[in-house]
Image 1 (tube, helix red, strand yellow):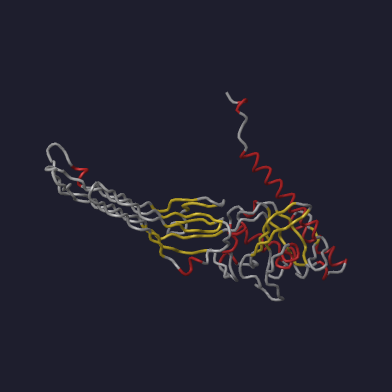
Image 2 (cartoon, rainbow, N blue to C red):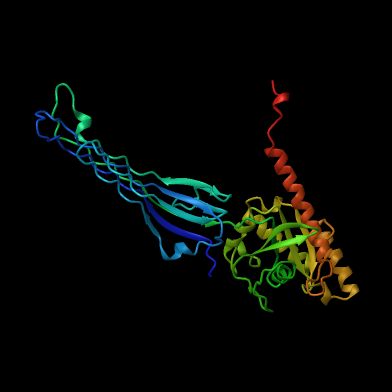
Length: 346
């Protein structure tokens, strides 16, 4: 299945049904009066986050979604049925934007969340609605109101606890494959990873979700390479794992490049907790390892961990460091969302 994280779709709610002009005609009833029913309301357009989806690929093949028109009113005071709704089923983490792709309409972060995108038009009144003491046989009815229509953007941002960042060939996909059941493409050339990958990590009887995105290079924020369009998938993470390859000649410059791209992208990525690791350390001897660790620590201001996915060196230490940051963030969120004890309220 192809990975699609952005789609433009057209939505239109249903028109309301027209009211009916009708009169009661029965034997032995001389003045039956008006009995035209109201029209039914048009169908609505909803968006709903569902389980089991991880891409917006369905919206590549269908871009137009229109709800049904309400049924017209009928005689004998019969109101028309409501038009059928349309529900756009999307993965958890999907955001809905207006046509400008900048104005956020809603953000669906939990399974079962729904949002009304377009409300159906109201049905028109039948002629029985207009009867009065001065007009006992009205011969008019209202048409239904038109529905709403709009072009919208669906944008998926994966929900993960930790995100992998670094230059191409920094060992991100190899690390993901070594600690999860995910099977990302791995090869010895740049930009092997063309779309984000997710995996579930288990460490010390605890779990968290790890996201790998395509590598960043200098100028990614301006569209160089694959660009920074996939950075949105690590916006929701609680911690970033920054991998710097031991094969780089200038590890400090490499670290600076990626941090610069994160800063240029914005959206609070540089404010997230960061775990820094010198990856592919099995390719270095002791002297090279010590030298590059010192350079990296001087540039970053934090002590980097040593990591080799091939030999499993440092893997558990990195995972425990990530788990520690995640649990700290989870605790802070729980405290922020906790309801105050009513006994302490005035």
